[in-house]
Image 1 (spheres, rainbow, N blue to C red):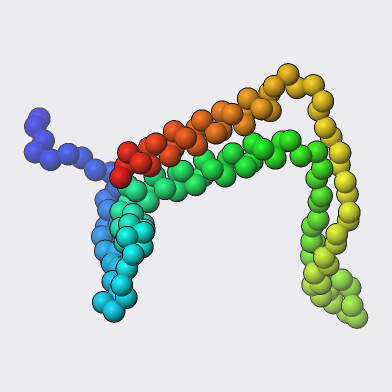
Image 2 (image 1 turned 180 degrees about the vertical axis):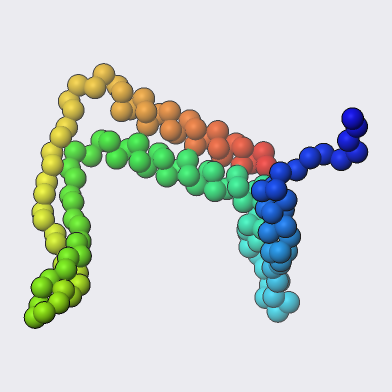
Length: 138
């Protein structure tokens, strides 16, 4: 038994048809505006899928550095809102109640033997790697 074309699942065919229904992304350049080199680079990189993905990855790694530095801060403040049904007259009516309960949770580790600083250093290194990958994508 020979096959002259590859087999595709029905989900794959539906996904391909759905992708074809989307219009090609277009961007317009203002003929009157004088673009700087930085604006032109930003325009091209934001519309190229490879550089856009590399840029988003670098931004995510930069955010992870901030998250890892948050372990150095000992305090946490919490707030929440709730929505409850209140019995007024003969029926229930929804009422949103915003509550802010000032809660201070101090939890500070004095001796961690360099664990937090090593995690921060690791995230900084992955940020540098993502930056190099972004530069390589250029």
